[in-house]
Length: 203
Length: 243
Image 1 (spheres, chains in turn orange, red):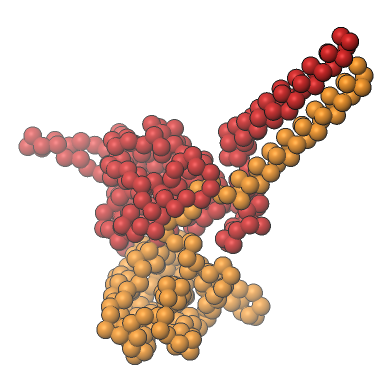
Image 2: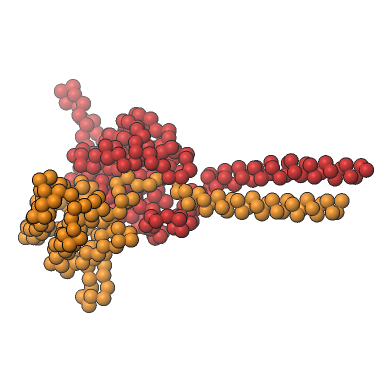
């Protein structure tokens, strides 16, 4: 359930970022936050009714969107309205399904929700790609000939790459280093045995 | 007869001394050298080795952009004390955010220092494999210093954040960036589960600094606990995000 929730959240945010990216062509680096962008952030902060339960986007995704707007985007009011319309389309669909848990969604319902986000990206010639192996949603812009793509934003939806990371000593790494150590010790042991045998024979 | 006795005692010495003590000494020496010198400098090798055992996605890039240029902005002399009506009022400089180079993911944009904990290392925007191999990293779902919002910083317990075991309330944390220098004061230290969402509040509307690393500090292997160090903003230029 959490995985689906994260995928949908990421897809929704990706759509927002994708639309925002369309404005970045003429933007200077670090543009600040304007009223249009604040309007979009306010919309992202609202909840959606799903089967009578109010659901919201994880705050860290909204924070990422805010910083993306700060850094790259100089959004106009018209673009903001378009983004908000897309957000509301996704929300309306989630409400219409009438289920409070994503785990109860059918595959077709999940695909429909994700496709709505993809439609938003398509408006600005962006594509949303979801890598199931790395659990990363990437927003890419296609070149004019469609042969190459440039990543615009990555949103991790992997369970292990949440807010708090793994910051400990990696066991496999320790095993690898210990393996080298054991090899060295073994080599030293073999050397000692050969040396001692040689000394015994010489004596 | 004497020679025979000599050979016999030589074998006993070899078995007792060389075959037991020497390997132990070797092991201790190798582990000591590994933990002190080799491992901190071979994290790339370690991560590569872990690829064969772990299902975690790995970042194999070893390139990052360094946009950090030390500045004196925000150091003690820039925080002026104004006195009026017998009350001390602290004024802090404000920097338009449009005047700074906002870091991209993986950029090294500052330096992180806790002198009391012997911590001094590069500060990155992002907390992936690459960033944590070369320093400590800010989670991109939090904010950069001066923004006026929560900052969440991660570091490995075996390397750059091992010194957090010496953290105590009242100690000063210094973050240096190209657009200013920031001071924070440690207010609390707590050990919590890695998935304890009460350990941080990324939705807060004030500037707080939260550091974390795996706990226990010197334990080999992955742990489910994290040591969180909480600090409050003391000084440094505020970023004006409006346009």
